[in-house]
Length: 480
Image (cartoon, rainbow, N blue to C red; front, side):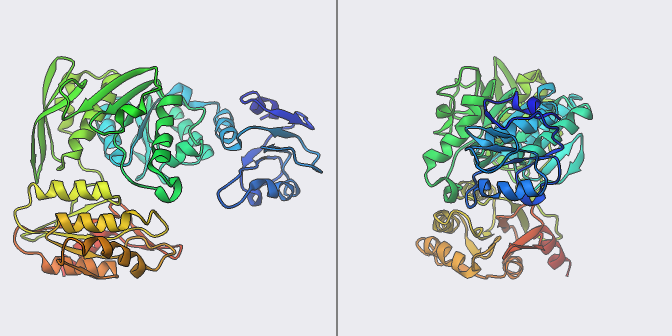
């Protein structure tokens, strides 16, 4: 592809310009080969501009920079934001595939994956060919593709869009993280509609303040989406659309004036039932997934499906097809007189929602097993400890993904919160042994909740991912 075609997509100053043929786009100078365009990204730890000369030595024929680089005689396109340029160039490279698709974005601290899953189930039942991109991977018409991040980097993301387009997909549903928005990963994509689920404390290690975290989420609506679906029960819901000029659809279980309203809610261990009221219609919904938060997720999915042309009337029928998502309030099948649930809850709000909801149908004791991830927001650790102590009959504090931190030091911080409210806890650093202990303790009608990792099949210790699946640990131990 000619450099001039890429340059036409963004405002830039041209230095030493020659219309060279670009063979590929790279942001890692070590991966540059002959004919590549190298984009100088000013990262958190390293400024990519200092690697421009090594990139040229490796074969780069043009550079994208945020400043003029001396003593380099190949073309330089100077841009205001090289991350934004990277996202736009990635779209151009794959012939802007998102323009041929209806792209749905879902953002929020919790609920993104389940809402995506519910929406895809509704669309599948209506024969709408759909792809999903998110935490548990990429699915293109039920084929699975692995990925490293909730929202992939621009080249990988645009390649997924191109593949979805080429396979005949009509809709792409993607989880959009705050990091992706802050780092301009989705710039150049027009979202047909986007949904906001909720905003609670998370990622403060990166955003420092909740206002920064909220501002990043808001970009999806203020700058990128045509239509918005908003949870107005969340205190940040209306803030998301203060500068939004497109169509706004609201959902709630508290405000009867919302466009999609959940009423007469019944919760049980088996799932939930409620009456959905939308645009003058009343629809009885029953879904075999427990948890009040899943009522919110279904309301969001229904509102998005409606914007895509699905009638409110059909939601009752399609709801019956919805099954659980891996690692989201997932019941582990065991031969015992107690129950085990595995969940991805790794924030203070998600852990509280999980435990509060299970308490509503737990007839015995609630035994929780949880930890906190290393190299992540440290402020939430004592908060999560306190939440577990307040909402569990007994807690076992253990290791999650310690990454480069010492697991016991993470547990020390969790313990500060839990010991404020209860003495009914122990600490077992080895996660496998912690799960075994919980299963040994469980009696008739008790519920064991293993939180934090959910669908993950690894444990990250000092940068090495070891195979570890909470569900496998439970089944193997119970089989013995």
